[in-house]
Structures are given as structure tokens and as C-alpha cells.
Image (cartoon, rainbow, N blue to C red; front, side, top):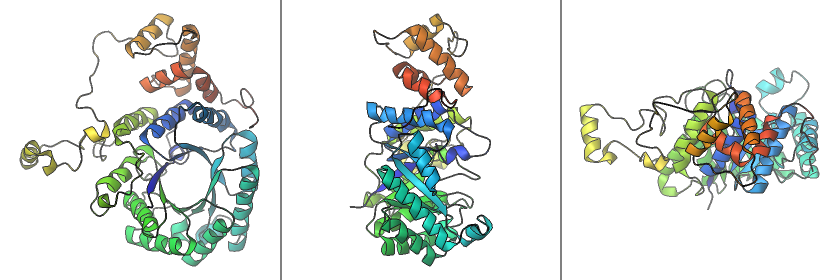
Amino acid sequence: MPRIYLLDVTNRDGVQTARIGLAKLQKTILNVLLDQFGVFQSEAGFPFTRHEVNYLNGNIELVERGVIKRMRVAGWCRALVKDVEAAFKMTRVRHFNISMSTSDQMIINKFQGKLDRASVITEMTEALDAAHDLGAETVGVNAEDASRTDLKYLIEFALAAKEHGADRFRYCDTLGYDSPPRIYERVSALAKQVGLPIEPHCHNDLGMVNANSVMCAKAAVDNGLDAYINATTNGIGERAGNADLLSCCLALKHAGGLAEHNLLDPAIDLTQAWRLAKYMEHAIGVPIPINQPGVGGNAFAHESGIHADGALKDRRNYELYDSEELGRPDFTPMPTGRIITTGEYGGIKGFQKVIHDLGIELNAGDDPHHLLEVIQYAALHTQKPLHEEEIRFVCAHPDVAEQVMTVTPGAREGVAA
């Protein structure tokens, strides 16, 4: 039976958002949490970009250690042979998405005569062939601005990708132009004529991103194909944002007309939702909106007399799902009195107090002074007070933490095996 999987693009598309950013350690923690949430694949970064090299290779090391247990760590490249070759030379990433603009708007006004419809397909297939020749395990092909691309040409482009061994086809609603009925109709036609699993990749410029993503995925499933919804944690993304990871999962699990079909990847563990959302809030410094589905401050709040009375009688009167389902605590205690923290100027006694309070037990061979030094660098690296998740990770995997925090070219960089 076809399923709908989640492919998180926070660490690639989300970090392109103007005026926000994630440090490499934060991107790494996010990947660990996404794996625990049950995401199928993280589009972790740009493997042809030098400052991503140690971070990406460090995350592949976490896969090999079993820290990241199920999730694929993938890279994004332009559909250019030189990008693909650089990615293989510099990193150990073996899952990719390669991207090419396909709309006449972009072919004419972005490429400005350098490419036409035929050469767009040629460049894409050459890059796809290069990825396979170099040893890629999976490659998805992205059609940027697919929603504004002539459908007949889009099908031609997708068929060429299939003929050259693409594993998935990413339908990009790059400007949030589509509507739910339109995207369902167009993707149904693609699915029927091409037969590749579909990746909905939608943006929120018109406020319909989650509905568009779900209906795009439903079109694939209704035509016998798996779908891989591209989403970001807390919906962060360029301009008005990307599809929200949790909202899409909740829709697939609880929405009328969807819930009864059991389409959501069974690996998704919604009890990790609160932990994931709160870490993302800390890392990017953007508060979760009060009305955010599931994790917003008012998601389970009732004030009006009718609603409060109904919720107290039976929460199902005014709540579609439970806060417990999302791992959301009833109370989040605020410490008062003496507080000991650790960071870039922390000392050994304070560090030992912090890890004791977190219940972290060091191994016999661990050097607490070295761990403190890595903690100090982590605080410098993130330029924030360290989050519990970061302290736990550094104590468990100090060598990987050092690797991902090293972004100077050549400092710890090794040629990919």
C-alpha cells in the first residue's frame, strides 16, 4: 500500500530564510531529533559547499554509529555535473536531490538565454548520470517552479529523469502559487504518465502550504505511488515559510477524509513533537506562534464559557487530538533560586554540577576537562546559552561535536572515502 513519508528540509531550505540561521552543531542536534521523530530523510545541507563538509561527514558518522538510526542524511545540489562531482570529492553523502528550474518564467528570465527547454533536460540528465556513476544510492530530481511550468513539458522533464534512473520526482511549488485542487489535478497527471514517487515541496506565500502539500501527496497515493512531503520544523522557510512538519503529520493522522486511509508513515512518533519544536524555537530564536497547531501556546487553551464548559465535560468536544499525543507536558517548571549554568566561560565545578543535574554519567575514560573545553567551544559556536540537548550530545559524542564545529577549510576536512 502506498504511504506518505516526511522529508525534512529545515537544514537546507529552512536555513536559507532571511535573518535566521543555524550553527552546525544545532543542525546536527536537529538531525538527531528528526530521526527520533521518524522523518524518512533530512536534506541536511549543500555537500559541494566547503563549510558544510565537516558537518555533513560528521552526521554520516552518526548514521554509522547508530545514533541516527533510520533517517537518511542527504544533500542538495544544483543539477550540474560540477556540483555532483564536488559533493562526492568532499563528502561521504550518498543520497541526493538535484535541482533544475523548469518554468518558462525562469528559463527565460533567470537563465537569460543560457539554457532553453531542451538544454534544461540535458543538464539535468547529465548531472543525474554523473551521480549514479559516482556511486549515489538514491537521487531525487527537483523541478523548481514546477507549479508554473507547462504541464506537458513538466511531464517530458520527469520522464527524462525516470529514464535516467531518478528515484523520486520533486514537484516544487516554489512561489506558493498552487491551490489544493490544482496541485491535486496536476500531480495526478504526472503520476499517471510518469510513475515516479512524488515529493511535494511547497511554500506558503498564499497561506495554503500545508493543504497543498497534503493534497499533492494524496494525488500520488491515489495513483498508486508513495509520496514524500517536504516540510520544515515549525514551518520555517523563505519568505512566508515552508510546509510545517507537525501540521502535515496531524492532517494525515486526524483529518476527515485522510485519517481513515492510514497513509502516514508508521515510523512517525508524534510524542517527540514538543521536544523537536521547542529545540527549534531555541536554536533559531523565533518563538513558536501562539496559534501554531499542536505546539502553540493556545493549541489546547480554552477561555469562552461554552468552550471551557464543553472541554471540561469531554475534551473531545473542543480538542481533535490530545496534548499527550505530542509529548507536551502539562507544566514546564521554571527554576528559581540558585542556578548554575555552563558555557564559554564555565569552570569544571559548574560543568560537573550541570551534568549531574541532567543525570549525565560520564564513561570511565572520559576526561571532564576536555569535555568542558568542547562545551566552551559549543557555546562560542552557537552564540547562545547551551540547550540541554546540546550538552547531552557533546558529552556523548565530543569527537563528532568537534568535527561539526570545525568549519575552516582543511582543518579537519578529509577526502571522502
